[in-house]
Amino acid sequence: MGWLWAIIVGFVLGLIAKAIIPGKQHSPLWLTTICGILGAIVGNAIARAFGVDATRGIDWSRHAFQLIAAIIIVFVVDMAYMATLGKNKQRA
Image 1 (cartoon, rainbow, N blue to C red):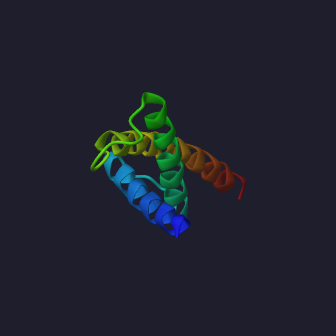
Image 2: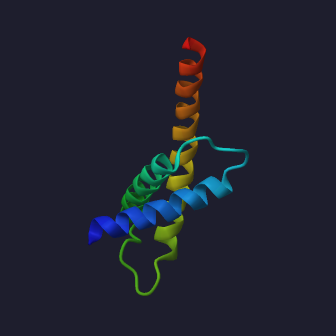
């Protein structure tokens, strides 16, 4: 069941990150979901490093770290995706 929650959280984080980044992102939904999952993993690691991984109630700081990581990852991956897509279109 943990993998299902990872996909759901990754999907939501990826969509929120796409909405926050200005301009249009051209990466597909499956890639956005993977970036969101990676953002959640990286955000959890950063929160653990800062000592905020286990708090009572809702872990707002952990979620903030996850969202910031997801925004950065979605932005970088979308740039790489467009660079690769642009090169493929030039070859054709």
